[in-house]
Image (cartoon, rainbow, N blue to C red):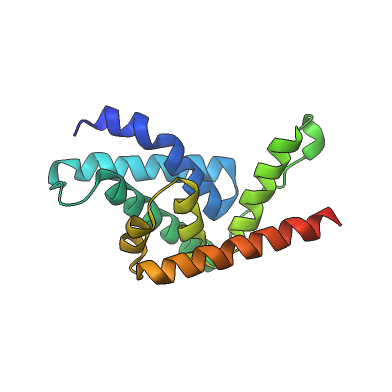
Length: 156
């Protein structure tokens, strides 16, 4: 498979997965770029045993987990958003809140819901995270319930 095709097909999806981990636009950009550097490096060794998307999401997940480990060890610098800098639409605010809430979830839940938001099949998610399909299905239901609860609490 040609790198340029992969890059165009998966860039936005991988970026959104990274945003789900860190809720920081610049850091998510860096992590997405790091993912595609690794894809570029290892593309010649990709054997097509799995779907390329599964392989790329696994690389992205590993990049994100390494970033989280780095943040735990050395502390992360969180940039606060000045929401008054520009007028935000309700949809933009909802998306920002969603990414904020996702970033507060435990690591495995972040992975699962980020992949689900990218319309990755549950069987693929199970392979990526190393859980059974049933376990993934239950986790997705619980994560959706948690996120819904956070949105309702925010409305009050």
